[in-house]
Length: 393
Image (cartoon, rainbow, N blue to C red; front, side, top):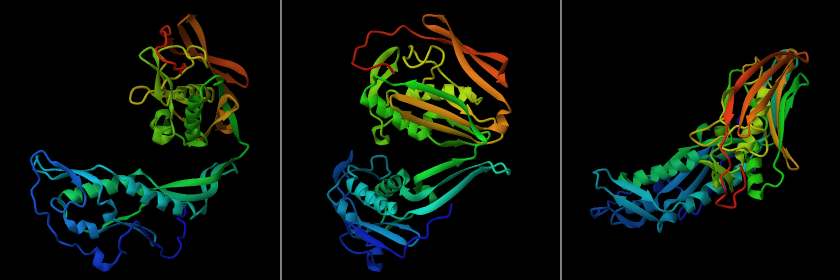
């Protein structure tokens, strides 16, 4: 993908007390006069007793292909900091970063207007079969920028001499966003596996979590040999990532948790990828039965302990489609017809008790069964009385 040809030099002085200049860029050697008290102290960035006053004349400067954005550090002068050197190593912890968020958000708003067209070929069989992403693209700053700024400020306030903090926004600090992108594939890619589950009766928060998780999986292109972690792909379940509090299973109980309901996405995906013939590397049953799939066909995920992982063993990429329609979640897997070669697959389960089931995987050739393999046994606990108003996961 070619980087957009940026507009001529643009200088934004956001919340800046003085413009960027050669004089402002020179270190001003004004040393803090007092030693820190034992145990450290909470003060403000502008407290010249402990932080060099020269910092009030310095700037945070971000650059990208000739564009320059600057923020005066003096805009943070009243923000709290904790300073200490009890370990022999000067340390600083910032207590407030709101002005940095404003600065970075303003840059992102400008970058949204700098749209360029991108076509990203992903696969070509050489016979006219292809997949590619096409759409209007722009860049956004990612979390690495704020992390760099906070870390640099804390280190420099604690021990460094006043100097401009300058960062060239390389690829590691940028995320490409495709606006109204279109994923195009030839008719040779066919629907090989699918699963639909209902979330009728779910709370608005649970529905939100299902939609957010599905969006992260939608139009995912899985290259030959590539392994996918669903837990990683749908991002950490935090409010910052768009997830809300809803019912989830924990130690045999239904509790309220951020991201409750996302296991419906992993479970539906489990059935779809197995029905498409992909290799499942990791799958866990829930602690208790779920309402949207039969016993033995669910797949629980929990950050740090349970995941759904699968791999594409085909010679060509596969495409994952994940979306909601009405009160239903739909997961489709598109596979190159040449790789299927007349084969189809079905994941199914047979109850062995009210709280247990055995799962099987059947392979068909041109519609005729050729093999059925035992996948595994799933056992569940009886649902406990709810101690909250949480719905089932």
